[in-house]
Length: 117
Image 1 (tube, helix red, strand yellow):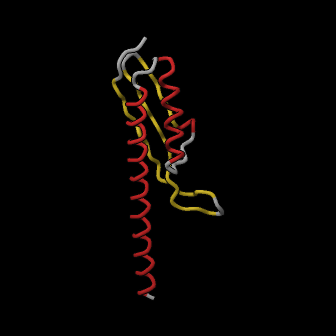
Image 2 (image 1 turned 90 degrees about the vertical axis):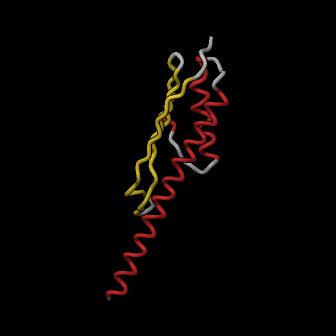
Image 3 (image 1 turned 180 degrees about the vertical axis):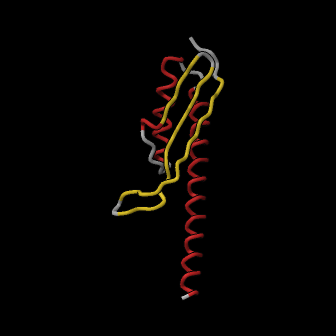
């Protein structure tokens, strides 16, 4: 009985470590996607820059296997600052196909961009 208990505890720790590692990896994926996309579109006209960055972040995240909701990705462009805020979660436990426990993850960064027309 003790062996079974400790075996299940060990499996729980391994699963928790794995889940945490994958959540951290998804954070760094989003960070890289945002940095790359902002560099690509920094020179665009201010009126279209935020929308283009948001759409490209969603597209690249989807291609990387990350499911980001369009409402969770906010890009605001004011004067010479561009702010990208993304909120998502990594599911940990499922019940009948629905996530019942998730790790909330957030990325929020402000970039300085050249002023445009």
